[in-house]
Image 1: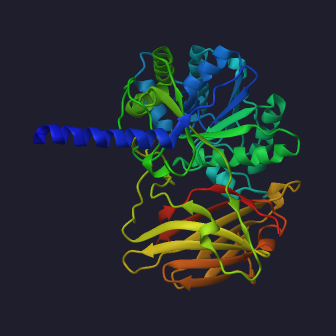
Image 2: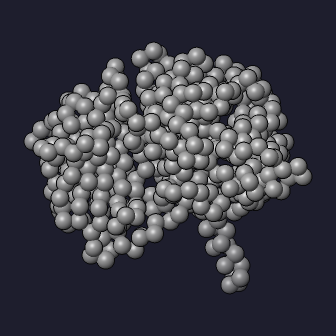
Image 3: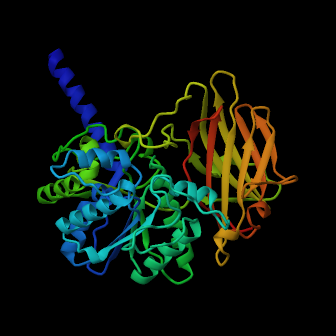
Amino acid sequence: MTAQLSSRLLYGILLLGIWIESVHAISEFTPVRVRDRIVIVAPHPDDEVLAASGLIQQAIAVGAKVKIIYLTNGDHNQAAYRRYTQRQQHPSFRPTQFALGEQRRVEASAAMQLLGLASKNLIFLGYPDWSTLRLWRDYWETDEVLFNNATGVDRVPYPEDFSYRHAYRSENITADLCATLRTFKPTRVFVTHPCDTHPDHRAAANFVQLALLELEAEGIRPELDFYIVHFGSWPATLNYHPTLPLEPPRTLRDDSDWQSLPLTPKQIQRKYQAILTNQTQVTDQRGLLTAFARTNELFATGQAPTVPLLPEHAELDWTKAAHLRALAVLPSESGYVTNSLAELPSSKTVVDLECIDFLRQDDDLVAQLNLKNLTGQRGNVRMLLFGYRQGTAFASLPKVQINITPDNRLNVQITHEGVEDPGVTLTNIDTRMILRIPLKLLGGTDIDHLFATAIAYFGAKIADDTAWHLLRISPN
């Protein structure tokens, strides 16, 4: 055998191995049925087109019902709108304060019409673009209402939107999602992946999962699937390549059960045209947006991991723990970045949050943070823990924030108010920090779910995070 032939054979074996790995990692999408009632929740107009144009076409083709719920009108990026109007033959002279949100609604309706979905099936909530994660973190059961600098208002300003004049408060988003889902009674719900690096996309995942928890008591229990739009430099190949497949970001491949929905050439072409309909976004981001018109679409099953219960006096067994891995790709906290891609951690060489593990023991939540300090310097670590209990208003339950300083001091706040004697303890073992947190601090020993995230800081800059995740809590 010649060296050249041997080299080619080895290359072929490597390619086969990659293909087999991909086959095992990604399963076939569960087909849509005629009796399905599908809801796609989009943080902004165009997210539903990028992630689910093929799904929408196939659902309509089999006779399934489809609704799109838009969390925002996508009205934050006013500079992009001005550039868009300047490039039109007849620029708009309307004030940009609300014109962008109105235009993106028009574009979304045109894109959906191209895919075969009538405007009556589109529900716009109109909450503040680029601020819904702030709402999730900071605006629960408070007299304060978030003020949106982009539009200069503190409530939904669009008369045609479902949530018109609703104040920018988290309870209102949750109530509006519950109302729309309750009316439609979906069998399948699709929303952005919790690890998507756009802050609004993370918020959408949280609000939708919360709304579905609230509706469980009413017998509304749809299947939940996630889709992803923003994750670092993914997709790696930009621009329109209709013969290339879309694969999950490598970092997330093992974190979810991914499913691939194959598209026909006609569906791909129609998806491409629908993407181009979002002209305010294509003006600045054509290469990124058209990269989603591929041979398939990707969805991940949404199942909350369970925090296991250990016997009262047993040793902590972290092999059984619910495990949340840090991402190393972060959401931008201040405005849009080039091509809407997330920035890599600016201080990655200083501190590295590897993962966080959760166990329950007796009446405590036990959390283990694995943190490497690559230069020997310690940064701050912040955990946010929002407990949930069926039948109790989520807004009224404690929103706990635990800050760990470089010198191992603990600062605990509940809804931004300091707690003098919270009962939280910290133990350091090598690069691990183990926290014991009384469940009563989170709302009681009978809470059944927990929204959690951990963030590592170096100075004022975020160095690493785990994104938000929903966890089930084992009963005692």
